[in-house]
Length: 110
Image (cartoon, rainbow, N blue to C red; front, side, top):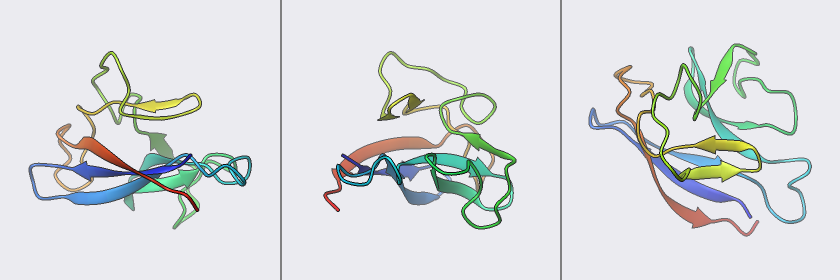
């Protein structure tokens, strides 16, 4: 099942990201947070082409991996199949510090 998580930074940045998909369409639509240098934090459908949903740039980076995330914890906060990201050490698209954290989950049923 898919879920929504909050991305929060001490600079005041706050956003929602979608992770995974739903039971009936996850093979066509499953999402994970990525970083685009022009559009910041984006949710990308990783089943389709891995590109920015706004500008179609392929120069994007998955949260949970270098160079966008620098800390690994024992258990990922976000996970969808092989895509994983951790709570701390994520690049904030506003202040450009590794101070953004992922929190919480609201299960999606659509």
